[in-house]
Length: 545
Image (cartoon, rainbow, N blue to C red; front, side, top):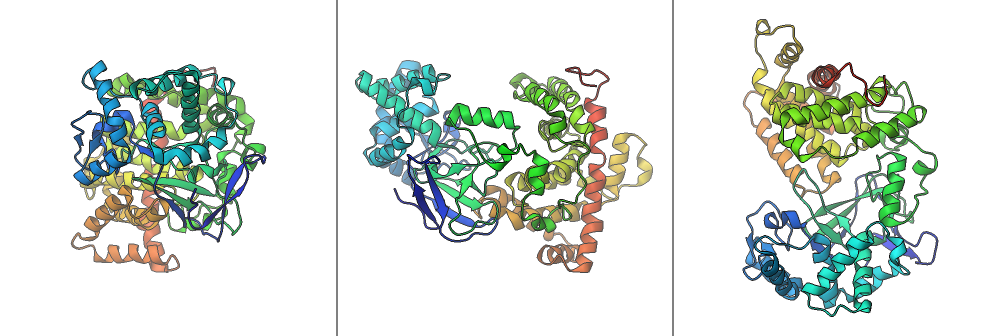
């Protein structure tokens, strides 16, 4: 197993921590630690097969199905030839058999397709051995919840590969499937459409922490490992296998169910909430280039700690943890009703000022979708998005290069493009209603300057959030160039550019505060009133008052 430069493998499978990857040099926050090329498995999810190249995994291209099986898709002949040599020549016949039995459109689930490759590709023998050491001793008792499903998946793989269904062969397939489950990564990124499974033996050696010092992103058939904060030479590199902003009980459950271990990081040991974790981040000064330039441990704190209302938080989170139904998503009225219920449940958290504690950020985010995409009420959607950018995202992701923060900035820019026609409208045309006050505020703002600033921040940090190949980075860069190319905006353009490069530039700093920060704060000030107007009720749920 080849370990990328910058990392070294230590420990053993028999030690308490198992094996670790440690840094062979120091890294700063956002620095590239390593790239992991040549994955053992890199597949798109089955539901997105028809949209994704099965080899390079690009989604922004037209793809054509394999004429033999209709079970793999390619953007070009080179990709098709490369995948044929790598794997598809050994699976095409099986996919064709699946289609013959189930009719057009019949496809195998993602885990079964991954298992089939692991079983038939000779080049994966070493990977199977290396990763198999991590799951030695596995048996049915290790996975009681999904053992039956895994057995059916293993049987399906053996059947369509026309391999003999002996107990030994089935046991091997089950062990490989379990190994895939605990060592593979999910490539899902809803904002750019990426989905799929990624398996790389070296990447699988990185252990978990709910206070990680690194994070992983994916670009096609490559994984990118970056530093979340400063890492010293010889320090263990760790990532979070889950959303580390989940409540502790949910983190424990997720880690136990899939990876079979209890996390012993300081966040879990001391039960630190999202605010305590944010204030402990050692590089808060990086937020000087953000919409939160004064984000420090001395910033205003919530009036109540999460621990003091822990029982309520658990109850609220449990009630809101299920995704909104497809029916609700397709019906604006049902979606609004579901949001109304969730917003009412969030009131104890809002009353305590715990806006960054889930499910408040999730509910606010869903509200921006409803208001913007379903209602086309872009001013209200923009105001709620500003609130998220100021009060939620920096707490959940205190490093300004957090992926969610970059995406939030791009969302602000997109919404500003929809509200831009309101700039400069005469004040006499507005009434005193909530919407009228929001529109009046927008009419007094230089929305082009705000958009330029948030995009400039996004472009500055996006390479550290992912890479210069990131789709979000390219989109933000193009949008920024369009705004900077507008006539008559030379002064504003120069001041924003000066602020990005030098925050000690007093003229640029004053301009940013006046033309960008204060307007964003003003819009955010409407958010809670919007939420209460749209989704509030006098009825209390779960007994909360």
